[in-house]
Image: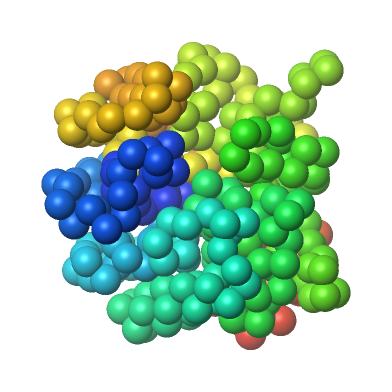
Length: 295
C-alpha cells in the first residue's frame, strides 16, 4: 500500500489570505488565538491512528507558541516552514522574502534543534511570476518545496504543471525537489483535490475516489489541512460572501471526514514520502541537501 503525505499548515483563523482585506496585520494580537488548541486536537487524532505528518509552521505562530511547536516535534512529526507572516510571495520583494524566510527557518530550527528542510508558501503563492523564490529557497538550504498547485485559481496555481514529485529548476539553474499539491485528472479537467477548502466542499466519496485514482497511478497523494478547519466554533470574521463561504463551509463536517480519511489510507510525513520515491534523481537530490537518509 502506498504511503501518502499528510500536512498541516499551522496558522490561525484570522491569518488566512481570504480575510486579508478586512483583518489588519497590526490587529492580529487583538484576536482570540485558537491555533494551539486546534493543533493539539489534530495531534491527538493523529496519535489515535498512529500517523505522523508534516507541520508547515508560520514563524509568527512559532514565536507566539514555542511550546506547541516543540510538542509537535516531540510527538514525532516533521517541522517545516510556512514563511513568517503569511504574506503572498508575489506581493514581496526578493529581499523581504529572503529575510522573512530566513527568520522563520532559524527560529524553527532553534526550537526543535533539527534542520528544517521543507517549505510551503502562504496560499501556494509560488506561481509563474514568483519562481524567483525557488532560488532563495535553495540558497537557504531547503531540500524540498510544496508550494506549486498545478491548477488555475484566482490566488495561486501553475496551470499545466507537473502533478507528482519532480526536480524543479529555478530561474538561476538551481534545483529543488517539488512536491506539488494533488490534483485528479478527469476527462477535460484537472480537479484540485489536495485538501483544505476542497476537502470541505466536495463530498468525502469524491476525495476517497481521487485518492484511490492517484494511488492507482503508483503515486502519493499530498493532503493538507489547517487547524482552524476542525473548529466550527471559531469567531466569525467580516468579509465578502465568497471569502466567508470559502472559509466557513462545512467546518462542522471536517473533523469527521478527516478521521475517516485516516481510517481509509496510510499517511506519513512529506519528507518520508519523498525518500520512498522510486525516482532516484529525487532521493539523491534530497540527500545532497540533507546529507543522510533523513534530514
